[in-house]
Length: 99
Image (cartoon, rainbow, N blue to C red):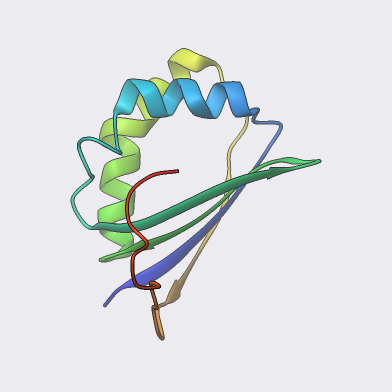
């Protein structure tokens, strides 16, 4: 069952996020089970909403590909992460790729 993953990582900066993204190459080498990724920043840090094939798919991607690069970049603390069953997904016609 597909899930929505919500993450808040206080104190994470856009430069740190971009460094991890560039090292992991998830836009070129899509993670197994990853369907959708949206990220933004507010006054507290990083916010992410993803759609994954399963919670286990996200956890495997995090452990195998993200965690080593997060450590190298020096992102502190732990994210607050929640998973919820996906009820419905809509992608507007013509919307594709990374921004």
